Amino acid sequence: MMLTKLIIFSGFAGITVFLGGVLANLFNHHIKETPVKYEIIHTMMSFGAGIILSAIALVLIPKGMEELELMPMAISFLLGAIIFMLIDYRLSKKGGQTATLLAMMMDFIPESIALGAVFALDPQMATLLAVFIGLQNLPEAFNSYRDLVQSGFTEKKTLIIFFFLSFFGIIGAFIGHFLLSDYPGLTAHLMTFASGGILYLLIQDIIPESKLDKNYLTSIGATIGFLVGIIGEKII
Image (cartoon, rainbow, N blue to C red; front, side):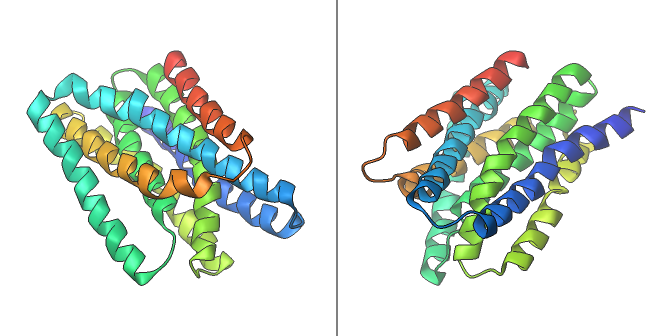
């Protein structure tokens, strides 16, 4: 029974990756190219950035700080930033826009692992965490879909990628539940490492891309996105 619930909740947390891609596909095809559409796109990018930032500040870093001493935590964080700087550099040399997708997966996978690890200890908290992860993934996937299409991926191929990525929630939850629930330190290192990588990608690629000249609502989108994270963490 518990295993079934874990599959259901982690599946919900992951399926919003695919749903975000589907919504972005519909938005591209059924909304005319207007300045308003452009503003909505940038506001969604900012909203997603705010949610990702809230995941770092409210979930990933606090969980890492609970388990790790200062020096190991700092090393994991800096290692994440440096490795993703190198990945970003290699990808930029090849061309393409994959920063949002990388940030989403760096956020999604550690949180899914944490979901599986806490499920046996506190099912109610795990349920709320699954909802929180699902809400995060929706705008992040929306933005990632557009980035991949602009990078040269076909719409069909992008949706197929998102469909398979949606199962990472279940895979991550199983890893956390069966392999890492007895190793909180290792889980904490993973979360802290992910935080460094995500923060680098946010500052280097995602936040600058979401900026729109002579428009101030996009920044409100980021603020609302962070507020969603605050509400989710408060409920949890």
